[in-house]
Length: 133
Image 1: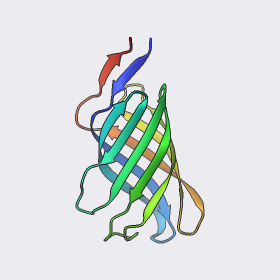
Image 2: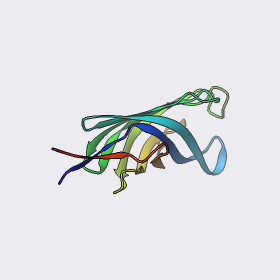
Image 3: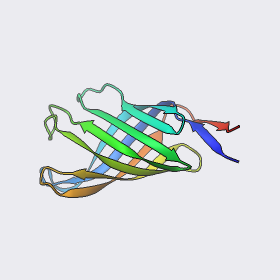
């Protein structure tokens, strides 16, 4: 039996990256997101934040597999000075429907393609499980 989830509510998106600009080590970028589902498409849009950054993630679901793209405008006052980053993302939905986990790609300012670990975790209430007709 096919199961679907309602992805509305507040989610926390976190991706982990390295940066030649910021120096050695792994950094993370976190946004509070509002989720919305239409058919087999899920969109996550960041809520306003003090840093002024913005993140948009569009996914197409195929069972628990989610493929799509992401686009971020970094904080105008942060390390990347309002730079725009974007790329493809592939995530897998946890069996309980409460988190997506996977990888994204991004091309850095040094024109090298990098992979980033990514997770999007539901925070407001448990997703509602709906039986497909």
